[in-house]
Length: 420
Image 1 (cartoon, rainbow, N blue to C red):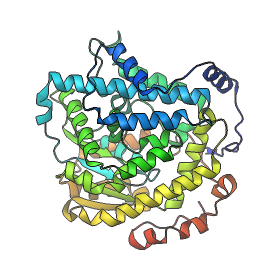
Image 2 (image 1 turned 60 degrees about the vertical axis):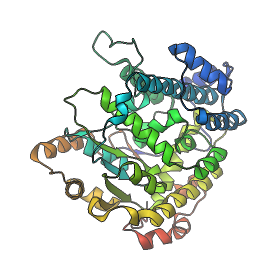
Image 3 (image 1 turned 90 degrees about the vertical axis):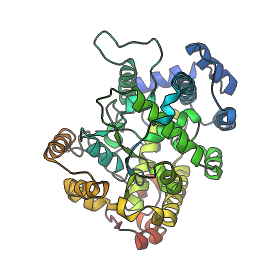
């Protein structure tokens, strides 16, 4: 395992490829006109029905906030607009398939296993491990990015789904522009993604906060009733189940940190789910989160928002945790389990077995072999181990920061990861 210390977070040093990509971005004129984005999506697909127009207030707000951000690079503006265009296209395709197949609404999503926990707290590894069990249905990145195929677009000559190919090409480009990202959060096509990706065609979810600094959107999101967005997400999961072969498994394994602050909505939409609530030292989470985001900003921003990142994400992590602690008791004891990060890291299969007991699923010999194979194929530190320096990079004393979260240590099984 190779230690990876990113020493140019605040003042990036660019290679030739990165400089060329940034120069290309500056040559592009990017317009965040909401109607223009919708019109372009409609023209590309020959579809016009975007469904309930209530999403427009969110799209308008996002476009206005991002357009007013003078700190974005040309490449940053271009990539952000492309995201919005992609979500508009997905929305058209979702509305189209629901119109043609209204029976989708009657599909049941039965007894999903849902992992809930802080970002950068082992939830990604856990859901990928659970997804190795061939009896469970998970959401690979390529499919979550484009949940509905484009009508008339067949498989490539080698049998590859073009959606998979596009995701693979995007990952290859990302590895050139931000090569150390693989050590922090791999985004290859087969990587299991978060289902809140499916809220993005509704221009909802806290994901927009991860794409770029978006405090106005955050405030709007926190004031919103999240239940309709969870219903929308579940509808898209139904579409994905409708489109899969009849022989495919139908019990889903899902995960997202966003659920921490929306447990009542999550349970209301998935009333028979089993819930896995992970816990980790928030300081470890924060240093991992802000390091990853600061590293990504080298391509999207003219200067790195070191101070804003540490302040913003400390507040967001605290909000996630306080909201979770307020509502954790609402999850049914017989179908929920708390998983400390340190316990999971010490005994992965033992932890999985406890989860399966809660979910009423037997960890049989086949599943054990499949998970063992996943662990062998995805060893810790496969792409390098990032060495963090919260004090040196962000001017934040880990011990002082940890005191802010004493309320969480007092109420959860998380332990302080001192010396990290």
